[in-house]
Image (cartoon, rainbow, N blue to C red):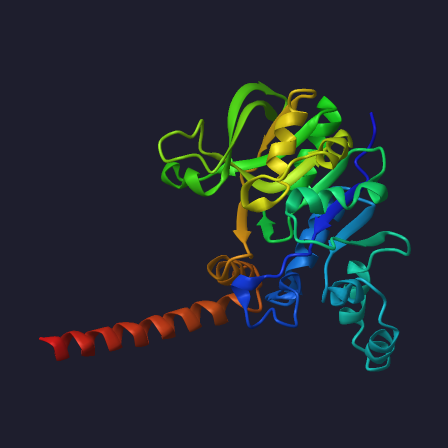
Length: 303
């Protein structure tokens, strides 16, 4: 059984939903509490045993490469000032020499195209794919559970979790077949089904483990919705050749590609911190109190 050693992170997106913040700063480098979004996703991959981190970038994304590089001046300054805790924290996040690779997606042709751009760096071995907009919180990471399922089945694994039945039209939805180990066989996939037609309420949550045969399919994949090369279309073809398994992740996922998900993630992760929890609660109570008082004044004025 081949080990899942490599992970691909498609980080070429423009982040238009966060303009003007993302005009000069990649959306992946926006911070949730005190870490960039991309750091959470890389940490998840590292926890799963990933050894090689492959970033598919675009223009104005060089700061991501800088983030995962050694900054000697900063390290030296922290050491001289005795801030050894901060120094050790930075070093613990630092990939070892040769563990990161960067390639360009030169045209915005969709997720499938971004994955295809990593083909030479991945080579002929299974790989993890983590969408950097989605950050997760649980005792065991989603990717780690998926890697363990892959080691038992030897087949492609797609991370899924539950959404409200009336929200299935927003996501890619899978149909659930026979259970096996900690997952189940995927019998169908539907991208954003019409209301009332979804085969389940299990949506694809941005985590995948794929066999390298996906690259051959993507190479000749016709453009789909939005004129882009769709990964879902390629996985449907791959499913005719190989088994696709679903891994039902039961933790929490925050879509940091949307402003509301980004705000929610900041609150959720801040509340995990002993040094921030009380501050967050007090701030929310204070703002809520002012809002309630304002609403009362407006109600009286309207009476």
